[in-house]
Image (tube, rainbow, N blue to C red; front, top):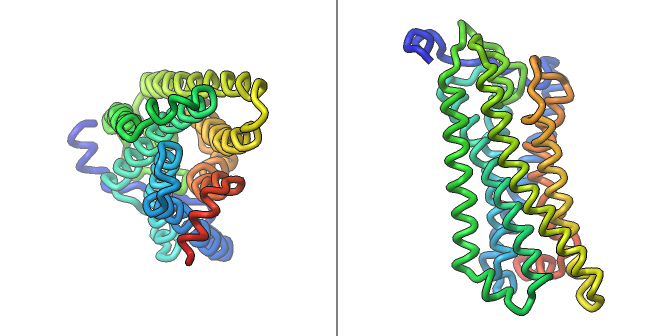
Length: 303
């Protein structure tokens, strides 16, 4: 982006989900409850993993990290959106917008890689249980979590560089409730054909590689579950929880980022609401619903 454009452009205007005051009041109450539930639910998972010795293994370390990502993900978006609803201030600064895009991409891409490692963890636990504690020791777990964050940081930095280079002509109105990469591309007056290709190729590689690892792990798990009987129910229940999260996360990500469009539709906004707010709120319930260890840890925490 040239210096002249940076000096002119100071903020973006976010249109949000609705301009109707009565609808905005309902949305404020709804999203405030969702945010509080998300922070509380994921926070309890993190604290439980920290204080309960029964949860001191790689599976729950990954789960605690996923909960941390979910809290950060919603915190990047929801507080600013709630503030805009209350104050009727629909603007976000240029720097704030870029920072929001970068943080969201960093967290989403980190989660993408983390989910692949979580699938590998389940694969080792079920297909090679005798060597599980050796393969998935604390050092290996920390290394995998670090790889997730570092890789997510590198990819998101590359993405934000291309967005930073975009030109925006005059006051920019973004038809969304937060600064998301596709919406910024649509609002730019630059030629975004190269940017679309770069983001499409980069997103495709990340999603395909990580999803392939997940699918391979679960194909092997299914074959192994067909052979065993004694541990089948417990193994199946933990795998189902992870698969539900994978399907929701990858399904919404592919819908938004592998399908370039000219304008943001109502369905795009609804999908964004789902994966930025609803999914992070649901994750703690999905993972703890059929998990006796988490149930016991939460009961112990409440005493």
